Length: 256
Length: 244
Image: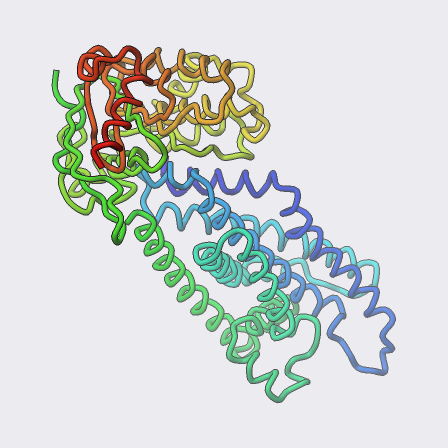
C-alpha cells in the first residue's frame, strides 16, 4: 500500500479518536454558529448589520473551523516529533514526502467533514430563521474552501515542525485569534478600514472568508470570488511547499 | 555464514564530544550481540548510525553488505528498530499498530498474514483490540518489538528493550527475544548485566564511546580472570579508572 496513505490513515484515526478534536473541530464552530445566530436575532434590522445573518455566518464559521485544523495538524506533528514513534519511522523506508502527505491528507478529509457539518447546522438555522440557503451553493462552498483547508493544514505542519507540543498549540491559538479578527469572520474588517484593513489584505485569511461567503450566495464574480480564490490557492501552494521543505530539512537535521 | 554487520573505525562526534570512537566490529548472521555499557557509553549512538538515524562522522558501516551512508534506502529495508522509548501509536489498537507497520514494510498481499503470524508469535491475541495507550509497560515494549519484527528484518536493533520494566515483564520479554534468535541477527543494547549474560552470543563492552572488550562470556572471564559478567565489567571499568 502507498506509504503516504498508510500514514494518513494512522493520523486520521489518531485525530478521530481524540475527543478534543471533536470538541474543537466540530463542536466549537457549530456552537459559535448558534451563538452568533442568536446574536443576529437580537440585532435590529434598521442597523443594517448583516454580518451575523446566516448567509454571511455560514461561510465565516466554515473558515473559523478550519483554523482548528491548523491547531490539530500542529499538535499531531509536534507530538510525534517529541516521541520515539517518529524515530522508528525515520529508520523505516518512509520518505519525507510520505510524512508530509500523511499529515496533510487526513486533515483535508477532516476539514471536509467539518465543513459539511457546519453547513448542515447552517441549513437548520436558516430553516428556523426563515432565511433561504441553497443546498447547491453550500455544496459549492464545501469544495471552494478546500484550498483554504490545505493552507491551514500547511501552517499547522510548519508550527508542528518548528515548535514542540507545548509551544505549538499556544502559537496556533494566537493565529486563530488574529486570523478570526483580520479574516473578517466576527466583524466587518473592510468597514473598519485603516491599518486593520491593510494588514488584513496582506494576509490570506480575509480572502478565505471572502471565498466562503461569496460561494454561499453564489456570487461568483472575479473580485468577489475568483480573485480571492486565486490568492488563497496560491498561498496554500506556497505554504505547502514551504512547510514540506522545512519538514524535510528538520527531518534531515534530526538525523545529523 | 556471512557478516550481517561490519563497521570499520566508525566514529560519531558532536562538536567536542566523541560519542563513538573508532568502533570496529563484525557481527555474523544469526548472532545476538549485546552492547553493554553505562549511560553515555555510546550504545544508542552506535545503533542510530547503523539504522541510518544519524550519519557517522568518520569510518564505515555496512549492513548485509550495504553501506549505511551510501545506501540508506536499502539499509532501511533490511533493519527493524525498537527504540529506547515507547514508540507505538497510542490511539491505535494493537492490531492497527501491527497492520500499520506491516503496510509500511510489506506488499499488500503479505501484510495481513504477517500481522496474524506476529499476533500468534508474540501471544498478543488477548489484546488485539486494545488501544496501545491502555497497555502495561511490558506489553507496550512487547508490541514495540513485534512492530520492529513484522517487516521481516535481516537485522533487528533492540535499544534497551527492558529498561524500567519489572522483573516478571523483563523475563517475559527475554523469552520473546530468545524465540527470535537465529531467525535474524539481533543487536541489543542494555546496561543490565544479567540481560546480556542470559541472551547474548557475544558481548561488546563499551565505555566512553570506545569498545573495551568483545567476546563470549567465557572469553571475557578468561580475559579478566573473574567469574560472571558483573565482575568482568567492574574489573574492566576499575582497571580503566586506575589507568587514568
